[in-house]
Length: 418
Image (cartoon, rainbow, N blue to C red; front, top):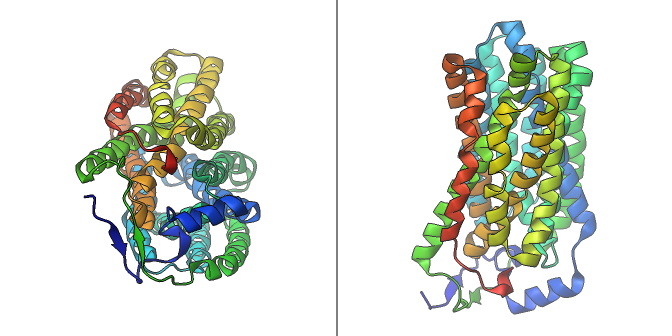
């Protein structure tokens, strides 16, 4: 394991694949973060996830219009998440070998057509196909956009990942608000209006592709010397398994709120659909804020400690939520969103640093696992809610952050990769 790893000419595609080379690190430190690019890719992430979040936000409309049960609602989420989960690691693996600067704009085209199809779909199978198309756009977007964020980071990897995640989290939080203001009053056909957002994202991502293309000029073969303090292959595998488990606990809980919190509030407190969507926005906005602060804190104090705090620290609040009143529930979800989401950037960057020569694949796996867990969990929780009631789901999910105890098995990383 102490032998140097040879990166072939086929896979050595610019600073992204071999970020720890001394010369490239020095250049990044001198140049600093490319803030225009980071802003552009984060804003594109905002647009992408705004469109994605519309799917969950219009569930009450689809449920009433087509007499769907909770299990069928969960299957819509699964159709959307399954394409993203299945394809993201494959996209990442492919772009590790040959980066595709304009694939982001092309992938956004799938989201564009998925939204148009969802706006006119009147059959359940067509709704599933439309959701799957939006998921396909996500599969293409996330691995390569995460690579661009790291390339533009100037060595501040946690900060860059947080800026990138902030756009996505804030976009996710906007879905319920836009659904309450536009889709609920004007109905399912109004979803087509949001295809204009997809077109704007295509234009921005094409311009980013123009910047990205010269950054991925093929380099000669390079040797990455393995730092003696890095964990061995066995510990790397254990650490990756732990990170996946931690992502499972986080994402499944977030999925339970994103997919069914509206129904929970309507069932328990008899609020209107629009009011419930605004309460969901409060949680998702807190989720976005937490995602922003988690990365810089990981750069400063170490990612392992932030992961410890963000997963396990949410446990008291998730345990209290099923017993809280309406106002207290809103306050608790703010704390849950802030604390849980602060783990996202640290988990992803930690995994990337464990396997820097497989950056795209690791990014795709972890984004894909997040989507896959969310989709599968939503389907399972929907079936469970049909049989036991929606309140029982939140009593059960309250214990998920206890999996944060697994962070004790994460290795200590040398300071030069933080």
